Length: 180
Image (cartoon, rainbow, N blue to C red; front, top):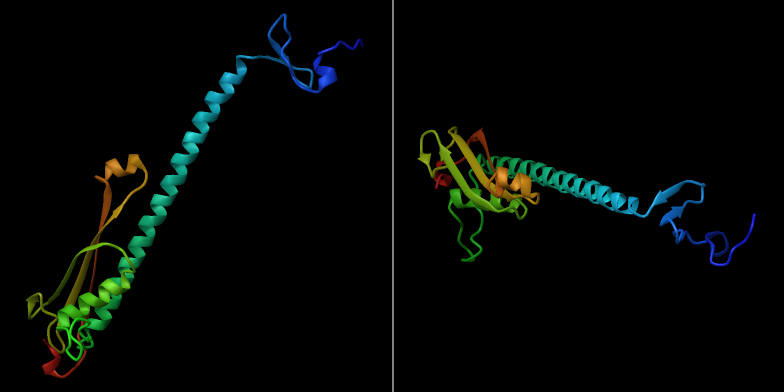
């Protein structure tokens, strides 16, 4: 074996043969300089698919979080609604919120930062906007839109996925004066 100056064997670097433009691999195989471009294109495709899948996983996790959080919020609001209690008005110390506004405040607090676009409280005897009296059935519904990260899914759902969750409870026995 002869040692030549500038050879890839001496310097330890892979250099193309000046005459043929072919790279020598350490394992004895040879590849042309154009195969490096193929590797770059293949890597770009694989990386693009990887990031698409990662953003899709994040979107699905966000939707799952939003759904479970909204279900918890509507359940907490429903459980508060059946008691007939009122919360203190944060804008007017010493005064209480109406029963429906108290239920809405509990739902917003339990939603933990999700953007709630609509909260409806209704009862069988009082209709929409009424939490009903003792023994009545109260329904609490929440609607929220969750923005998506992945452009493909975002176009399918017009930029956001809308959740509507509701629950229905029977009011406990409480003094009829707490109905408002």
